[in-house]
Amino acid sequence: MKTLLPLIFAALSAGSAAAAGPAPQVHDLASTFATVFDRNAGKPEEAFIQDFKETVATRFPGFYGIARFNGQRTQAQYDAALANAYAEFPAMREAYVRKVERFASELPGHIASFRATFPDYPATTDVWFLHSLGEMDGGTRTIDGKVYFIFGADAMVKYHGEGDEAAFFHHELFHDYHDMGCPGGRRPVWTSLWAEGLATYVAKRMHPDADNSQLLLDVPRNLVADTRRQLGRAFDDLRAKLESEDPVAKAGLFQGRGGDNTGLPARRGYYLGYLVAEEIGKRMSMQQMAKLRCEAAHTAVVDAVDKLRAASASGKVAGM
Image (tube, rainbow, N blue to C red):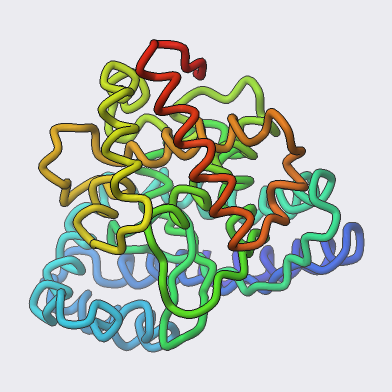
């Protein structure tokens, strides 16, 4: 695996570029993680941690360091996450290796099918494919002022299993494509609602038969059903937070842990955002929605939330 997979990634990237336009460079640290594990199997965890830091972390120090957490994670906590990854890996190793092989073979096709819907997608952002130490299955991270496009093989195994990941890939590729152009560093709740809701809406439109799990709308379990049971209160809460930059408010809406003490489902912002995008999609195409700039997107989101809030009060909100 150590020598074969980089060749597979290189060959597929070259073939995809020739057939369907530019392809991203893929930095494969996922297979390197497996190599480091294999040569330290049966050894004390300290040996694995040291080897990982020298072999893997040095290739992407911004992601694998603690500086990006701004004091919210200590070196001891980081080392504990590494130890946990080492302990958990034997049980997932076979599925992990299959996931790495599938990623290499399927990514070019997902990019090509995404371009069929969004022909101007440049696909020029480097892709980092790695073991995320439980942090993420896919998405972007801003590190030292630069945006990185990252896929976590470990979380893809945990949350997706062997299922069809086309909707997931198109959700993440849309994030790489989508840019509202909001100025400055402010990122209130409405921007995340629009970004995640529209990505989910695009994935559903591109894959009408995708279920909630494939659309990442089943973490935590029964997310959609539990949110719909309290939809009026969920939209009331959301409307009050649209302009907020409070980390607790964002955690409750978009993260699976942390919560916000509302009693509403964690990560409900993904589903609420989907409903907002669906509402806006009644009068715009996906391509038009993707091109909305910051001010226009803000106006559309607030208007849609107000409409959905009123409709939910009378039980008239459709949706999956």
